[in-house]
Length: 290
Image 1 (tube, rainbow, N blue to C red):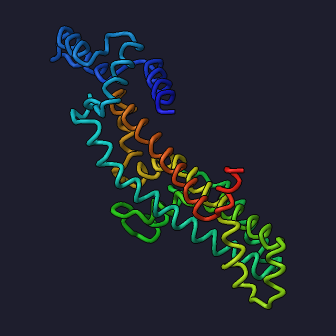
Image 2: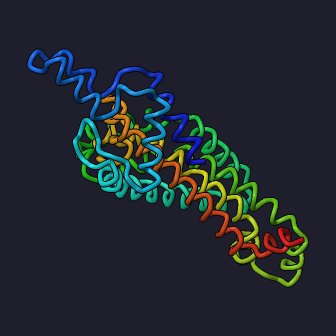
């Protein structure tokens, strides 16, 4: 996966044209010979296939090179920015999971048409709200109406990222709980006189949890993609803003470092989700063995 993703990204960057040294030609203080020498040093004058193979050979050793525009090691740049983005992603998931779980529980527990309608409207609205719109709305409300600082915290950017994840988790949680409550073991639990809240939390929830775990793992890529907008709007220094800087400067080593790091993070998230599914439901192991 990493080989395919990196090869495609490298080819697309080359097809886009230009590089980090393109702007130097407009500077009268820098000679053509200096630019030519820099291109030779960074290997920008070689064929794309040769440049990719050289980059891949070094990357396999853990050396992603130096950023051409920022003059710093790519690895240290990516790792220093990743901490902020991962904290933002974690907070976003916590908020989305909490809100969706509470609404889904209330919907299946009390079974009132007004509550069901409210949940359906929440799913529709949050699924239809782009991150750029929610980010600008929150920025306008906090800065211009309430007069609060927009920068310096993760809560507002996390709120702006939550709408599509609330929609996804809420729809799946409600559907999963409704399906679980129709199973035979739930009927048996009710026959024993257990309270409905206990039945949902102790029995139905675990059966409905695996799809949520899967969606959580799959959400990592979308969260990092959404962070590009949220970090730009709220002025955070994370992977998203670093990606914007790298692409704007045609900084190929930095862009490739971000691509590989994000791809690896998505793989780790999905692999962890599969492990958590096995821990939550041992029947998956039995199904694989059979």
